[in-house]
Image (cartoon, rainbow, N blue to C red):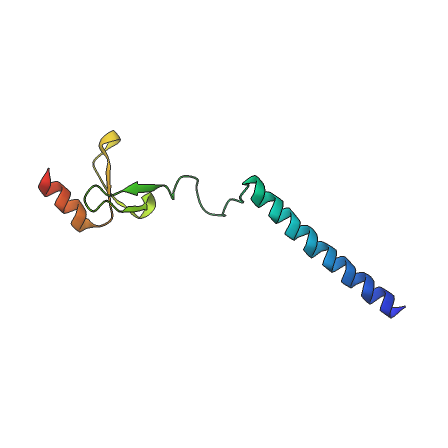
Length: 86
């Protein structure tokens, strides 16, 4: 009787693992992704630094200007070089 109970629990656990793996695989094929808790949409948009032409996440970039004329820089040195050039 104990063997039957242990075997039943083992089969059930294997079933749960296989089901969750298949669900994750199918979701990956469909392109579905889970949102990361605590992150807002659009915060990881990449922006291009006009001086050194590197791409950095907008949330880490240094912004200068306002409105549609906002420029994003990877460092204060690049922002200063852009200001001196303009």
